[in-house]
Every structure is written in C-alpha cells, then in structure tokens.
Amino acid sequence: MKRKIAVFTGTRAEYGLLYWLMKDIEASHHLELQLIVSGTHLSPEFGDTWRQVDEDGFSIDAKVEMLLSSDTSVGVVKSMGLGTIGFADALDRLRPEVLVVLGDRFEALAIVQAALIMRIPVAHLHGGEITEGAYDDAIRHAISKMAYLHFVAAEPYRNRVIQMGEAPGRVFNVGAIGLDHLLRSPRMDLGELSQSLGFDLHSPFMLVTYHPVTMLEEDPTRSFSALLEALDQFPEHQIILTYPNADNGGRAIIPLLDAYAQAQPERVLAIPTLGFRRYLSAVSLAAVVVGNSSSGIIEVPAFGIPTVNIGARQQGRLAADSVLHCVADVGSIESALRKALSKEFAAFSQHAINPYGKGNASQSIVNVLERFDGISHKTFHDLS
Image (cartoon, rainbow, N blue to C red; front, top):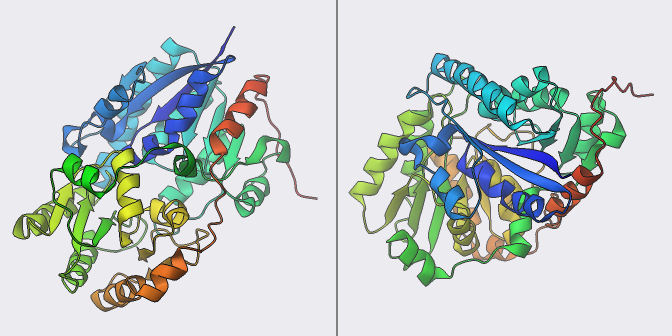
C-alpha cells in the first residue's frame, strides 16, 4: 500500500518551489500525493493561483479558505485561526502519513500546529535559515521544532537545525528545491514571454518584487516609494512588478504599484502573479532581479543574473557574490542598481557560485520519504 504524503501550499512562490517534488511523489511507486491548497491561492485579489495548480494537472484534495481581506497583524492572526480550524478538518478527512511544508509562512504554521496535535509527522523544507527582518524567522524555527524530518538547503543550515536539538539522522542537506527547475523546467524566450504577458518586452528589463518587512518599524509604503523613485533613474529599462505577499502591510503597497504601472504603460507591467514558468523565464531574461524576496537570494544566482536585495527582510541568509545588498533608501538602491547593471558585474554574476546546491533536491527528498518508517517520536539531541 502506498504511503499518503500530503503537500501543503499557501502561496504562489511556495507552489513553484514544490512543483517537481509533487511530480516526483506522484511518479513514486511507494507514495501517494495528497494536495492541500490554501492562503493566497484561493484569493481573487492575489490572482486565484489555485487555477494554475489545477492547470498543471494536479488534483487538489482539499481547499481551505483562511485569508481575511485584511493585512493588519490582528487580521493575519485571525486568518491563522480560521486556517487551523479548516486544516483540522482536512487532515482528519485525508489522514496523511506525512505532511510536507516548505519555509516560514504563517499559513504553514497554522497547518503544522494542527498536524502536531493530530500526531501527523511533518517534513519541513528550508529550515535552519535566518531572515532577521521578518517574523517568518521565528515561524521557520517553530515549524522546525514541530517537524520530524528536515530537508535543508545548505550545510550551515543543517548544523543550525541540529543545534536546535534535532537528531542528525533526521536532517538532510538536499540543497534548495527551487533549483530543480534549472535542470528540469522548460523556459520561454523573450517573444513567448511577451506574448504570454500581453506586454511587449523590447528593451532590457528589471524584475521587481517587494514584500513588507514585518519585524521592524519600517513603513512599507515609504520603502516601496523609495524603490519606485530609484527605478525612475533608469528610464531605458522596462520593469515587471509583481504583487507583494499577504503579510501585514502588503496591501498598502498594491495601489502604489498599480498607479506606477498605469502612469507608464509602455515601460511598466504590474501583475499579481507570474506563475512559476513565466517567473523563471523572466528571471533568466532579466537584466537584474530587484526587491527583497527569498528567490533573489536562493534561486536567481543559479541563473547567473544579478540581484539587488533591499533592506533587512532577508538579513542573515547565505548569499552568492552576485547578490548586492542595500538599505531601503533612494540613493542606496540607485547605487546598487547601477553596479548590478554594469557590464562588469553582469559578467561576474555569470560565474558566481550559488551555495544552495545543484538542482537535485526533489528526488533526494522522495528517497527519504519512501524509506521513512512512520515512527515520529523524538527526543532532544544534545550537542556533545
């Protein structure tokens, strides 16, 4: 009998990272995929991205509505509460033998705490990392302590999870799962991407994603306005602007983003979500990736493309030398962009070493899940 593996996805970005893992679970002779979809996937405001999951051929076993139309801290907490109730029902119905979650989002925390109480073993991807500018940092570590199996993206992160008391035999350094796309996913050329977007990309372009910084007293609209002002200094570059996530403060950015695009319709495209194929295609064709998304740190360097990482959201992550860090003010962002767009730095970025592996994480994870004996009682591992 096949072992039932439930995979949870609550955002567009996380789904793109999990794509090949879900395909490999489906292809396994020993595993059965169950898919739980929630969060922004089910929100028209964020693009109804569950439809992309469906179009990709996956069967969605549970849709759990949880997202309130509020991005205040109280609204986020209430969304978590709604999610936990819905996840309890979904997990009780599906009865998975393992729940797979990725990262550090509040949606993932909601389902993991339900799984913990329901004694469903959790496999956690991308634990041990540090993002000091977001409450995601604490969420990630909390999920690690509730999880039994750990699939980390680099050896320092494996050591950190072990330092948290997890036994070394349950912590696997498989590399960043998003890099599997580099070897396995077809990408669009510039013409195909333009046609798909309904936007004529005819000059060098920047790919921009900016999320609120949730752990610092930073006004997201002020920081995002500084970014837009810096982008104005590069009129020869077109811009693809993707929407922020559903963290508190994110919705305040959207009207600024839309207004900026509407004022320059030939130069700027604002879009709620690209979907992972268009996103990866855009990354590979961009002159630079700009903002504070984890993708700019983890996946983008593997494409040989420069990243400008703004502010403190990703502070503490391992980063390739092709990632330029700057503070969230106009002058610093403009200076970093000028360096990133220089011929010298573009050539340098082509050969920068990415610390997150080589793109074979998915099958490594499946191999462990196939061997897992289902015993999930654990003791605290003390460092000698």
